[in-house]
Length: 141
Image 1 (cartoon, rainbow, N blue to C red):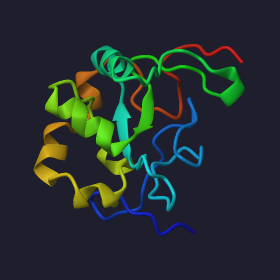
Image 2 (tube, rainbow, N blue to C red):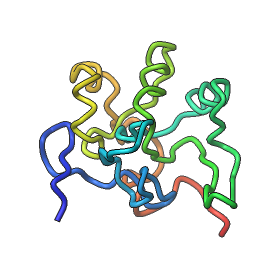
Image 3 (tube, one colour):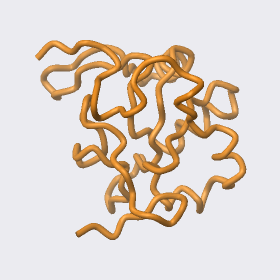
Image 4 (cartoon, helix red, strand yellow):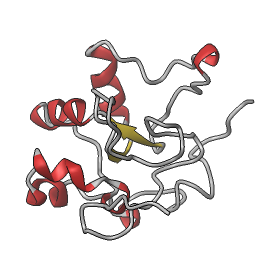
């Protein structure tokens, strides 16, 4: 089985399968050789972050069927590039982080206290707690 660990040192949990995320599109924010973007951080997307990302040239909201990309909405969980999350944190718009689904490799570049400051707390948000059981919105196939 997998030896991937999260920032707590326990088994890496899936980030999301609806929408399907991860560099390998397996639902997990794994450390993958060859992934220069380092899609290792599981975030719960916010409107503010999605606007920020689009302004940086990475539109995550527009569907791209040819790439099997559904387009994302606030509330979706997604494996973000570590560098983009750090840029957003510097701009005070970093989305919350699902620590159980964030790969331990991010600890080489991000202080654990900073991650805890941004820890996703499902009690503070409306909607489903588990990003895998219900999507944040209806998706067309």
